[in-house]
Amino acid sequence: ENWTLEGSEMQYKLHLFFEGQGPPPLEEVFITTQNLSVAVQEDLMEHCPGLLISAYIVLAEARLPLSQEESSHALAKADSLANRLSDERYAAEMEVWPIQAALASYQDAAQEAATAQAAGAGKQPSVHFVVCHC
Image (cartoon, rainbow, N blue to C red; front, top):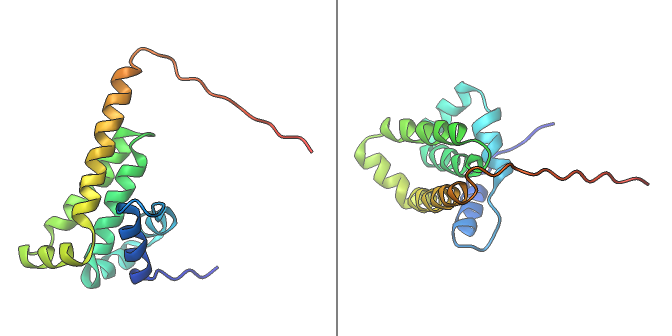
């Protein structure tokens, strides 16, 4: 199956998400961060680094409830990618891509996760299985 990553569409979906008007573009985020080869990611860094940086920040937020360690790795990857850019290029990417909004959303989610973890300290998680029969 062929899949096309439309940067403008992802940008639009990210803006909608951070404005509270749409879901996070998780399909695009996971394909960008998990399914693209290193060579393709390097090409993205050359031509559209804001897309890749934003995607890794959203990935970090999505992984917060599941694995703090994996979330931290994704955020560190976004930081590493951002540090590869000159100050001027990073500022230009922040004007076009919602990197600041992504970081703010991640911080809010991290705070919520920490509060939830503190409130649930010592509690055993419960799991419910639903089996549907036709």
